[in-house]
Length: 163
Length: 108
Image (cartoon, rainbow over all chains, first blue to last red; front, side, top):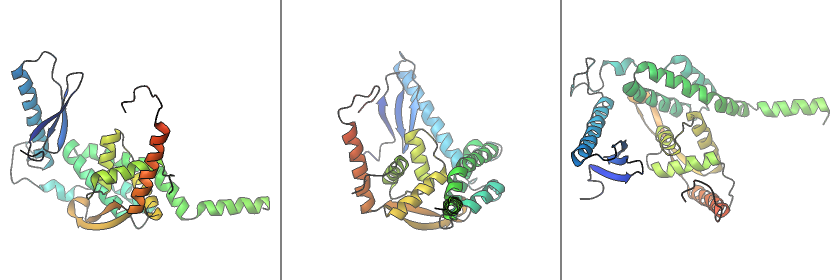
């Protein structure tokens, strides 16, 4: 069996007893109480695998609104209407450089959709606004540099000081 | 060869190397979040990428637009030969500076 074909791999047994396990391409830490028997150990790993499968299915939007499994539920009704906060998007559109603004907005949109699937729409909106707020200082700084604000400022002080 | 890469530039370049050939904004962001255990604002990543591109250390190419990105295209990044040499020189300089020092809690 090659490395890629392994479904589950124990990567590390940590000093506190936790297991670092890889399921496919995802890594998870599994809490195993010290002194756990063989069956308990297997149950913990099994439980973590089950949770991982549920997360994957949720990310793939395979559940209906009532929480029931539905293989045909992908790209359900929500996906068409779900959009990030418009004002935050406009702020980014205004401040980001022209050559990368579409890629940046696309990345934020993609993250918003992922968060909405994983954490719910409200939390995704909050995270989007936080992301935009954290981006304000670097964006504003680069915007001021781009429009030559600092050159104007230096020229102004030079003229005032007669340099 | 210049060794004057800022720390942000180093970590973004390392993240690109780890994610190649799928290095774009989200994958770089997630890699940094996973490896550094902190969230780096997306705008900081893009500002750094822009600087690196101007220096000729990375190059970008546009991907296809998808619905899950609101119809916007991805921008993929890869490190140029010049960028790899600069990163190598910069990290080697750090290694030389670190060699022989004793730092509490360090594993390497």
